[in-house]
Image (cartoon, rainbow, N blue to C red; front, side, top):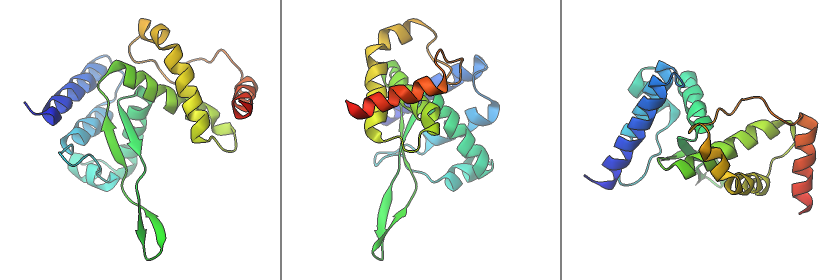
Length: 172
């Protein structure tokens, strides 16, 4: 079995497990399973439209399902750009299927940090990396609980306290 086939198989098992635990809707399961079919030797970078056509859902449904995948730490996205006639144009994203628990916790934490801190004018990548490091330090504690932490659970801190934490990161 090739490396890509084993990654696809492991990813699909995780998606099915989450679906049977009622953490994914049928449309989300379908979109994530379809995303795995695009994995090839040269990478994984289908457009939202290509995924929507393959699984016969709307582009908006695909975007919502991918967002849920980011929340759970199942996939990680990187924005791609190319130069066209002297200016930069966004193209389809590059995706990475995450199958290791430590990578999933880190990716879910980064996504959660971005979602929590949207009230801040600009969340730099440096601040997101700082959040990721803090999550990595507490990783053992996170792994002892449920395998896929829910990103929108009740927060112990108020939004103003989160903003103060972010501001302290900027000075360090």
